[in-house]
Length: 380
Image (cartoon, rainbow, N blue to C red; front, top):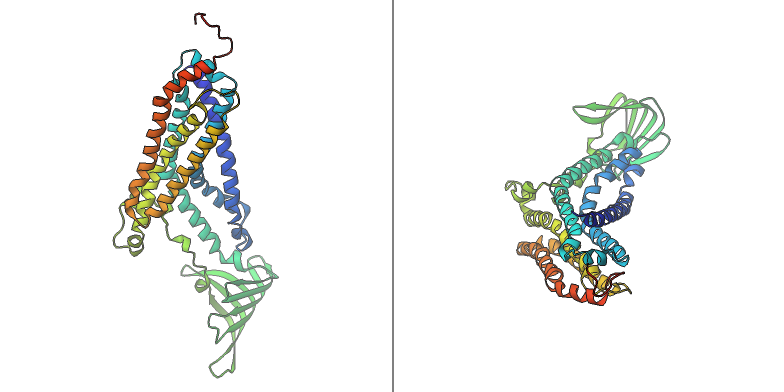
């Protein structure tokens, strides 16, 4: 690469990193707000919260990378074109391909990174995030045992402890509404959380239970020790089931036919697999749209608002169309072909406009706006 090409590449790369970082931070902030229940309801630490939020970043990066490349390409190319750097480069003998190659090379790097995130990084991070969320929500000690407060796990269990000394709770009250017709209340002098056969169990000491029987008579029992099983009250988290976004490519294509859930979601898995392979190609389309927005027409000292607006509309249309096709392909597998056709066809058309038809535009551009310092008849 020449020094001019390296300069163009550096300008676009810097803009891509800034814009990707900004968009990802905004997206992670929005995603983090939906995970505040991890702290508010389950009393997890801030470290756990940020760990869960950061695990969602690969999916956000993969979604925003093509859009960030388009915005960065338009912004940087428009800036250096207004400074006449592109005109000087063309006057120095650089072809349209040489001028556009830094952006297209960066697009190829983004394609490889995007593909790597889709195939490996995203599934691993999504699985780790679901496991972390499940562990946080299943932490009954953190969710229930709050000294001096009435807490509940759904509508079936209400818990109160007067205070906590070390790992022991004092002055415990438990209201068990598992059977609404025969609720049970338990009072205990102290309690401790233990594990029995791998299940969370509350060991109550000096306990008293009260329950209405079938005759609506109050039954009172006293215990020196009472084992209260908490496993039935653990929150069942549907996120433990691996979704399409959590699976690796081979798991999406080669399904376990003995698994009812996978057979039921076979079309969705196939759509996800095709989307993961085709979405990286959108980086090439976005780069070509950015090049067309700034370099795809005659030179104008008044700017390129019309072409930039047209290219922006085209970029949004292609991105939305790809997402819509992925969603529709989950119901109609035949639409998976369109996931491949859209980026390939868009890339061919944009390439022809810039490198084929655009060659004639480039000659008109030279006539319309010669570079500063150009002297007719002078030798270059």
